[in-house]
Image (cartoon, rainbow over all chains, first blue to last red):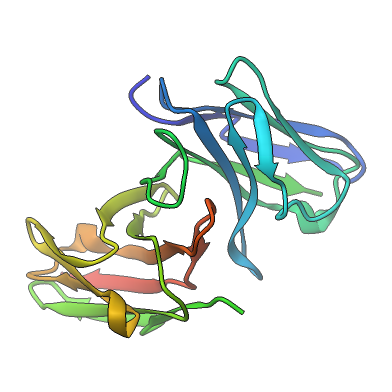
Length: 115
Length: 108
């Protein structure tokens, strides 16, 4: 595709429910990143994938958060037993081959509201 | 710890004015990117600029890596330039560390 796509665009859920957020990176990009943007914390890193492996999961805030990537392409971020503090915009990015010298390109984000 | 700081936090301009946004970082960087977050929340890539100077239309950026800062210049601002500008850097890792942003409002 032309850019990074994410779905859904918006998600409203009730506290305690599980949610899945999807990211489709730029075609051919091997590196994929999840970030979160919230009012109190700004933009923060969650997890990085190189292919289907996640060498850096250091930003996941709790064990309620998990992510996977299959076929070296689509990634899913899952939040279990959602809490109100999980409300944020979840952003996905991809880069050509990963590494500290690569440009990261961002998707439009998923706005999650936990009631 | 590693920090990326931006100034000013807020900027209000009249259309046609010029502005300079600053990004300071606490350590040597591998990568420095500038983004514009539009009112719909989309992060638009402006520059990849770990060092040197680049220009793209009315926008230009300069990074002085040895002094650990980067500047984004906006000339002849337009209302469509409104939004939040972020700088973000890699510090020997794959993840980007973001600054807190500069919120720009351009009025006609």
